[in-house]
Amino acid sequence: MELNLHIIGEDLKRYRPQSRIEEDYGVRRLRFPALFDGNQTKRSLLYIVESGLLTPDNIELVTEQSSLLIIGKPPSRLLKKHCNLVWIEKGARLSQIFSEVVELFSTYETWSDRMLNALISKKQLKRLGELAGPVVKRPLYLIDSHLQMLFSVVDRELYQLPRDYLQPSIDNNNPALGVFALDRFYDDALTHRKPFLLPENRSYRTLVQNIFVDSHLVATLSFDEVGGGFTQRDYALIVILAEFIANGISYHDEWNTSAPQLLDEQIHLLLDGRQPNAEELSSALRTMGWMIEESYYCIVATPLNPLYPSGLLAANARHACAQASHMIYAIYDHTIIFIVNADHATFSHDEIVELVTSELDRLLVQLGVSNIFNGFAMLGVHCRLARAAQQLGSQQDPDRAVYRFQDYFLAYLVARVKESTPLEAIIPRGLLQLKRYDEKYGTDFVHVFRVFLKNDMRIASAARELFLHRNTLSHKISQIKFITRLDFENDPDVRLSALIALNMME
Image 1: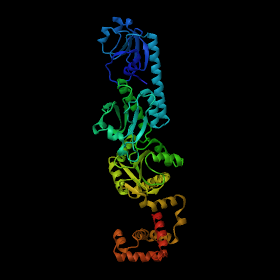
Image 2: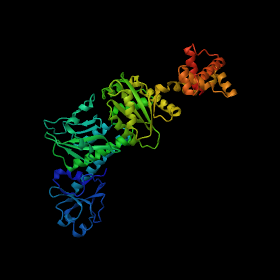
Image 3: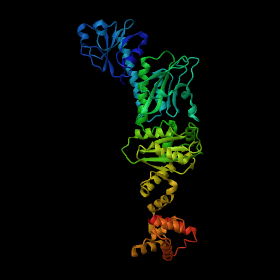
Image 4: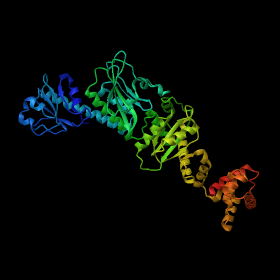
């Protein structure tokens, strides 16, 4: 991890250092400490030197924007140069300071390694907060854009908390009532890209850093001012931690900040076709105020452009979920999976589908919509059915954008049967004779029969669809009945089996 002089100077505060640092708190480019050796300085190193060695000739070797930690008072000539300086005038020896600075670099490097390992091993974002707590040394919180508390780190033994200290609390059953939203936010605050302070009507303030992915606000990180006022070190550390969290969200693009991390893990188990532990699934759903046995449905949004970056998909999904309560999403296999709790949703089924369609209008996607099902554990099955409806529908009706499974139920059954069984083995003999008659005499009886049955044997509507006169259609139906010898006019089972078979043939 590359440190800056703000962090190092404040971590040496027991020596009461003084400083003249010209660079912003966000600059981190010091890789490790070094003793000044009489050669020209490099911007990537922190040079530790006794003031007596800074002769006029040596000062000429100090380049602009270099960083020096000086034992003793710096020469006035050095103060005129554009470089970053921290100096300790009393109570320190060079060897002692150098040893402590090396240890500081080692401490932060270890912290950085642990944070990266947490990302690579796909730990929950809460783990990043836990690892950062001892380094930050203040209460810290991460709230997502849907006012879900992703993590809070408050060590009441470590922090000197004022008597009126109030932790932000989030009501997961009704996120809009979160104390954080009511007490700590205002609209303009959500647009800031750099760390900023929120004044409080208490004895402490809040340092805030918004986290954006593809220009969309996804979460807000905050430190509370306890145990002393905010310093440049706090500004530097909130930027560093926010970058780790942003990497955690984008590095594993399936991580979802619209739902607690444990629930997201359970969702991916179901989408993989695996069955999660019932107690863990129930516990994860409770963080959303949901229960396993409630009613749900899912919408599968498949991009037509496979080159869309996952971050773009997630940003649009996040924006859609912000418009509807009790809808969350997951990114799975380069597809957006929207999951709606039908028992809690404030919009109807059709309104949710229309909302998702309009929110994703900027992307080229096709939607597959599942039936409503009871039991969250059935999510994986119904997501696969929704995707099958989208795939079948895009073949049959390529101009549409939304495909509901209920409309393609028959086509799905036909497709599954055709995968495993030759058509000739299951098509009624009468329909095979009708097909051969068409091939021999150039008629279109198979198509006419299918349209007739699809229109519930209503001559008028079938004739309009076929662009035939009613008498012409009636004559063709008589011929079809004679060729097939099927009693479709009186037996509903014959009609159903004939319609399924005709779909298979077509």
